[in-house]
Image (cartoon, rainbow, N blue to C red; front, top):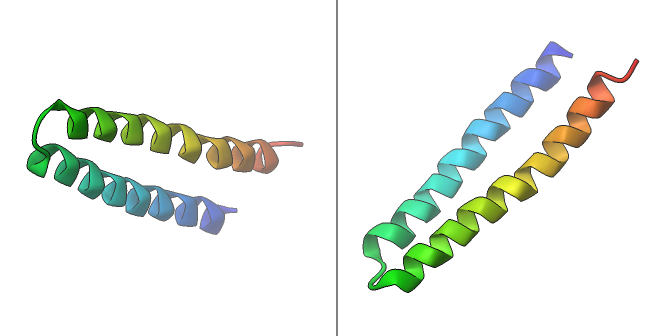
Amino acid sequence: MQLLILVAVVLLIVFWIHAFVILYHLIRFGVGPIPKQVSLIFFIGSFILFMFPVLAILSIIFTP
C-alpha cells in the first residue's frame, strides 16, 4: 500500500510539472489574451480530469 501511495505521489509530481510547462509556454509566448485564456481553461480542465482517478483510487484504497 505504501508503494502504491509513493507511485501516486510521483505520478502527481510528474503530471503537474508537465502541466506547468505547457501552461508556462502558453502564457509566456502567447500574443494577446487568447493564449492566456486557453491556458487557464487547460489548467482547470487538467486539474479536474486529474482529480477523477485520484478520488477513485483513494475510495478503493480506503474502502474497508
